[in-house]
Each structure stands twice: as C-alpha cells, then as structure tokens.
Image (tube, rainbow, N blue to C red):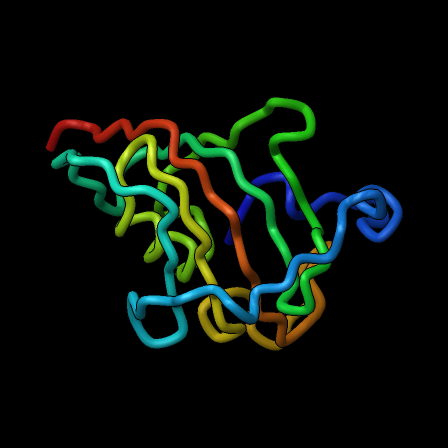
Length: 142
C-alpha cells in the first residue's frame, strides 16, 4: 500500500488541471518484471543496494495511463520518505532498479498497483506511470 500523497481526498482533476496531459506513447520501456517497466533518463555509477527494508526518499509525479496527472510531490517541495516494503509492489520493484540521483519513468500495470480497487484518486484497474527522482536510500544494518 502506498501511503504517500496519492491518497489525498482533494479532487485531483481540479488540483492538477494546469498541468498538461502527458503523452507516454513514445517512451522506450525496459521490462523490470511482469507488469512493471522502467525508462531511465540518466544513469548513475553507484552500487547502492536497495532491499525491501531500505528507506527511500524520492520526488514523484503520478499519472494515469491517459496522461492525466493525479499527484505531484514537487509542488510543495515535499519528497516522500518511506520503507520500500510500504510502497505498492510495482513501484517498489521499479525503485529497486534505480540508484540515488537517477530519474526515471516507472509504468505499473493494475495487478502490480491497486488492482480492481479504487484507492483515493486512483480508479480501479488503473495503469500508473510515475516520474521518479530518487534522492537517497537509507538501508538499515542487518
């Protein structure tokens, strides 16, 4: 379950109406796992290990597959910080393929997101596309 700003009660169609609809049709995706794809904007030479107990700090914009923005942590300069195992499964799988200071799109099919349930601003059976800037990773000692 994703506990970030995405589960806001405000009507997202009003809050983000000034943002243009994104066209994701020309993005070149690489498969992460069944139902999760990634497209990186930059590569960082790093060996940071990210596991399920890691705490990740990131900025994001979340879109529905039709390009409508439904959430944006950049607006208030309020990055999310949470354990990887508290993110929706597909988002966590995408983050594991990133390094701090990388930016990427992560596309998550419904079965790796919220499935057939409506969650806050996310309609049932929605494919989600995140623009993610991974700021840093804290991995607790074993």
